[in-house]
Length: 181
Image (cartoon, rainbow, N blue to C red; front, side):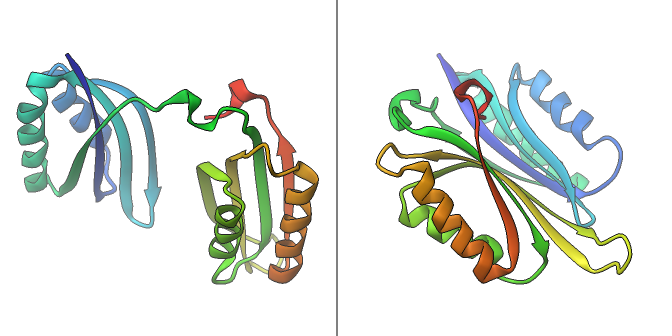
C-alpha cells in the first residue's frame, strides 16, 4: 500500500539541499510528487509531498532525521489524497494585490475570505522595492475557491473595501478550473 507524507525542510541556504533531500527520498524508494521551495531570508525552505510504500515510511523518517546533523530541520506528517469533490461547485479565482507594505494586509484579506467560506489554495507574497524611492512594496498572488453562494460581484465589493481600507490595489480574475493548483 502507498502512503503520502508531507515533508518540510528548512536549512541555511547553500547549494545542494535539494539534491541531499532527494537523495534520501530515492534511497528509501520515495517519489517526490509535489513541492514548493524557496529562499526566505537566508534560509532555504521546502514543503514536499512524497509518495512511498507504507512499510518504508519509518525508515524514511529515520533517514530524514539524520539531516539534522547537516543543519536541515525536518518535520514529517502523514496525509491522504485530497478529496476533489470537497469543493464541488466552487469557482476558481486569482487575487493579485499590490501596494505599500505595512502590517496586517494578509490578515485583513484572509479574515474576509474566511468569513465568506472562501478556500485559499495557494498564496505567494513578496516585498519589492519601488524603482525611484526604494520604498518597500508588498505583492501577493493567491488562488482561491469561492463557494457558489457568493457571487463574484459581491466578492469584488468586499475586496474593493479592503483595498481602500489598506491603501492597496486588488485585482480579482476568474480562472479555469484546470489552471487552479
